[in-house]
Image (tube, rainbow, N blue to C red; front, side, top):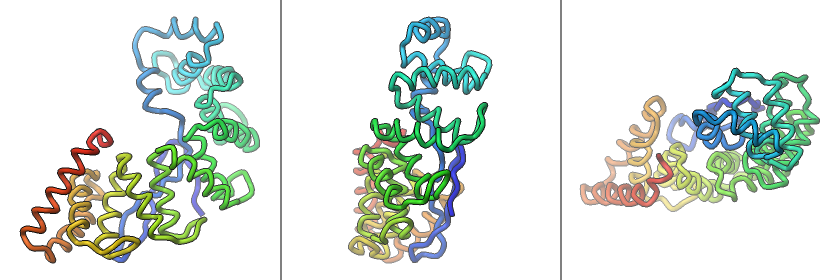
Length: 280
């Protein structure tokens, strides 16, 4: 059973045939557009202007003001004020506000925990197309968290978020297919979604793709392509989990001729140049 936690990423330990691999299995309630929140809510000297716009009924201003009160950007943190402004924005159809308000109800922050209201708001935002809400719903249904467990709905919502290009959803959908969690085990589908998540900037997917090409899991066995992905993983992953990628790269490199290693390095450089915007 996987659990949901607010704004925290968990780590799941799995295996693809090369000892123990550290693969992050994201099981988090995510807030909508946190990068946008951080940019907008921390912008200096515009709280008064935001307040004026929010009071005049501007839902975007209401949402940004709510994030300021929730996280203490430019104002004293006040979860009740945040809830009030999230609610005003959500009532006008602001999807990110609905998702964030759902998260607050889901965890009982400043209000009694209310899974029914959280589910209503998540559904409102998800059905409107918000990828973070779709991601959150997927895990609520998959885990049976505050709602009857329903793997079909879990996969449906995770796929919807993934198809919108949401990298964490793409990565987790790959994990579900790889391990047969709440979905049929299908390594070919897993490889497809790992590739998409890699293109979205999820460095752990680079590692998994390397191992899959190294072992011929879900893809054709290709040591040069495996080395390419492992070179990328070794350079892009955070230091703590980088060790397995370096270990795997050393192993596959033993099977390659110098020309093949050079080709793998060229492929890695070309791929990184084509996708550098995803890894800022």
